[in-house]
Image 1 (tube, rainbow, N blue to C red):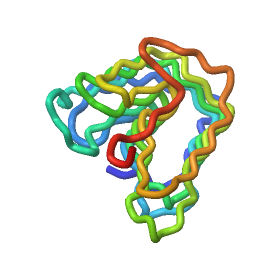
Image 2: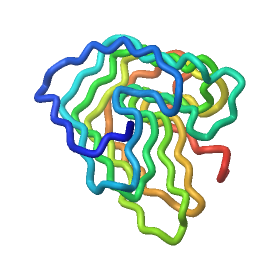
Image 3: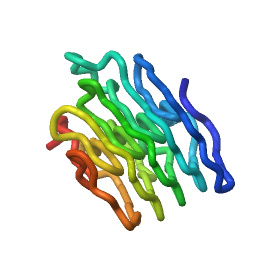
Length: 171
């Protein structure tokens, strides 16, 4: 179910051991254009987030992220002061991220508020197939442009992680 609110972890730690299929997978599975200016902040995530059914699928929403699986970005998503210590295991998912699996803007004629990731760190192992696996944002997809503002340091490279990658649909 899509997340339609704001979440302040108040500096607490959530230990999540999620093993799920369906679309998409993350602590918060999906944020869509039904809401504006969503914030997830002040949270540490421990444990393991694992996708169970992505092998062999080309579905564009077969994605996985530690905090957020999928977002359609004219909603304005802010992720502030978050740490991912969880292992993120894609099991065939093509778009996997330590914080966000996939951010997507599909209508070039609609304004976008984008994704803003500030003061966040990924320490977990990120395991995914293909070139769209990254420590912070797995894939950024947009027909023209999409604002993705990342000011998250220090950044720890793990597994085959890179900082972020661009989606194959618009590359």
